[in-house]
Image 1: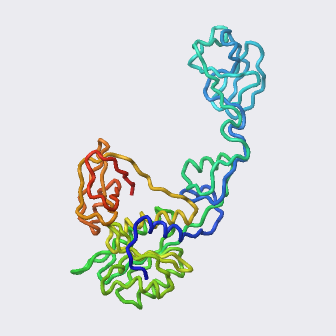
Image 2 (image 1 turned 180 degrees about the vertical axis):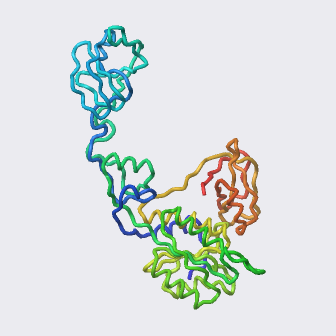
Image 3 (image 1 turned 90 degrees about the vertical axis):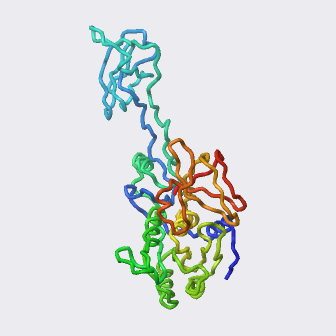
Length: 395
């Protein structure tokens, strides 16, 4: 077992290099929100499929705008033009309707006047074509969505438009969540003196769901090696990822790393130079990847965001990156020690400045509730100065 502390960058590389791909399944496009495409999506039509009007008005020849124009028909969206334009003629046309033969522009209704004779005259000084031309957006066979894309609502609209009603997606990873420690009780219980409610499991279940995976809670493993071994072994056999919170520090009852080795997990690291989250264990089993997360809730939250969330997306073939904003610090901030990369919860003020929130340490879960994001201080950096640009990571 490697007890050396490693940097965040090296730990991240180890985790990502250990990723494997989940299976591929076929689903309906209507159920694909938040899923990761496992194959490209191609269009089966040109878009637009014909030259169409982009405004309500009159289709005509631009060269004849100085003339009075005879209206020969009205074309509604979804109807085919029946007449080609002759000299000094136009067609009343609705947005989305097909352009008749002979027309090269559409003049807007508000730029026209209907004369007593029933003819139309152009009153504007300039007009665009106001035509969406056939296949100017997409051609038949064009790739419109690439494998690895995370499906968004606007992507579902694209699928509908190009006739992709069944698609290939990566299966959602199955993630086991285990809490450990005799001090824990479930949230619906009233804790006795020296007991605390288990917040980690439900926080992690929500984080797993947000990351597009399927979480399963295995309950609280008591501070008993045999009991914990049985739960962990079962979780490994049934899941792609296993997350265990607590039991990874250096106390007498912190035996998760040794239990993991007993189940056949090859441990890659047990400590990471980050704050919060130093006592983090990660290992590889032939059936699953396993994390031993710190028991304090802020640490567990941050280690999930830093390592587990990108790993889940990587397993589905998506190169996920957190949303970030580059903003200036509102005030100076200093820390006493700089041996680890520190992650600080921050708020973004109304005037676009970054201010640290009150943070008492890795057990202060309400600090994350108050935060708009987190910022990092690299190893060796003790001070952030007022006005200094920092990278705010959304959490």
